[in-house]
Image 1 (cartoon, helix red, strand yellow):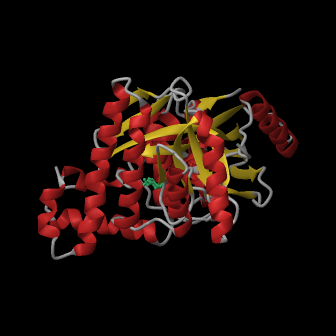
Image 2: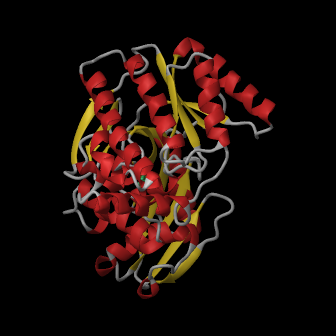
Length: 390
Ligand code: GAF
């Protein structure tokens, strides 16, 4: 498989520690890492109070952090195109600063009464950005864990999920649910995280792909998405509208497709709601298969069904994502689906290890034939959630 190789924790910690010391003239108080995620199943269910089942990527964002005494905050990124940002703590406000620094700034803002002296944050990442793999949550969660450790040790992981979510929702203005932040902070190695987003109840579901002779491939189509505007917010409003017409608190409360009959005069809302109802059921089916130590191959067709629902009912797929799913399944994958918010990004593919190369090649050939840019493919081992490195 090509590209996307994550750093080891040791190398990543040394790099962030060294760069912080060079940039700020003093060593950081520590270095923390938080992963991106790929969602096995359960897309757009989180803001409908439903179920999700993500795994953490081996790719992380690292935050080297040190408190200051001059009342200023400074954000530096080692990723080439990001400008350094510095301003007084008092001037933090939604939309200030804008751009990438808004994500960590929102976390600082959430704890500003403990950070009056200011703080310096240097970040470094190998999570692919804009690929639907939750690079923004990796950023906010690495900083949330760091600041929790340094100034708010009473906060548990679920509190940090909230802190990171509020940064994205209220500070940056991206109307996301809690899938990404939960995955980044709560996942454990070798498991998928089954999360009931209403009850905030979690279960670690074993997912040993290697033992089953399987690989979970991520194919990054290189087409971009953005959450702070456009289709994601529209879908969220449509779901709320459907729930209101059905007189339920959230679409999670609709027990089955037959109960959607009152939406027959609203075909668009019916489709949106049908995706959520069937997607919640798919999460439960997948969890049932994996929980009984069943053959993970059996989840493949459920993933592909999920894609068709996202394509036809939720209407957030793209020609590239559809081509990728089609080519992967035709070449013998057990299942494939687009992941994340939609309108671009990545596809996840479940495939036998000895067919993985063939499937990746088939997707690349299809992209070349259809005139799309070459995709980037890598395999994912369910990895650890956020942690302190040094
Ligand atoms: C994005 C959002 F940030 C998540 O909260 C979730 O809604 C996801 O899209 C779709 O499942 O990643």
